[in-house]
Length: 348
Ligand code: SF4
Image (cartoon, rainbow, N blue to C red; front, side, top):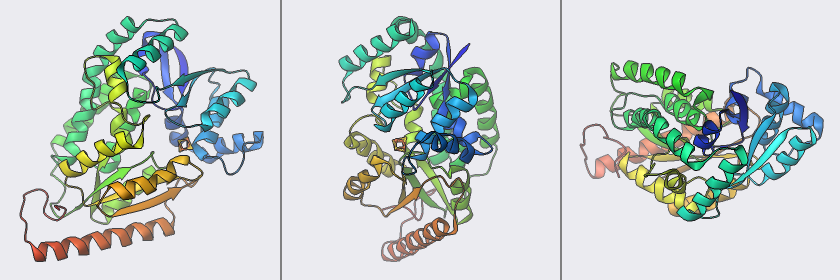
């Protein structure tokens, strides 16, 4: 199968129908033993220092791994991708644009999918067939998500890793399904996390220091039980067709679509506090203003750049945030004792 890089989640069903093996370039970047090396490739080419590390890293991955075909999402993700695409073309790569509609509209999405299918030499009918084949795999990812917040048997990192990988199923849906089923079996046999833990939500793009932040939070007696964007990658609202599925996918559209999804999940999952991760030099960081206006729970905004580890400054801020939530919950519990099994400290 010919590899095709993707700069973020795209309708992967169309790519598979066209006999491509989709490779999420972000996942390749963070899995590399030395991601800083890949960013340096872009900086040596002339990418500005104040350009987002994901963009630079994706460029580095394409060149380093010899990926020839790349779908660049130019609308609904990142405006920097437009220039990334130009630089990839300059290097002789076949960089193809894909633009989500500017609003969640089924008809527009249908047109967009038809165009993508035609560009890759397949049909929407063939992609619909792939959608049905992928549904059990997506269901499994969503089962892991439910086991995270409902059964309290899955770590924040495991949740992050398997949901974020639903963008390309690690390039092999069969192996993804098999390995995920094994993890689910292991998790089912586990004891649940303790009842008194602080339940957190993580919103925003995946963190460059994801590998370290989730275990660190858990060492402090808290756990991320909702990973917003990562859950969206698993398509929690699939609907009855591809156009419905990608219309219900919130990430490419207005921040208000995301807020509706986030607020519903904060309530359902009994969240006590929210971590909003923003990437340095990313336009999405401005959205922090809107999130803070819409979400009434305590919010900690963390920024990351090219640091793939948690520095002391970030660790101290997380500790202080959790300490504040703990005290807040104790005061609330003293004022109005609440005893709901499974969610004792985080209930509003
Ligand atoms: S973090 Fe922001 S700037 Fe970087 S690739 Fe994602 S959307 Fe673009």
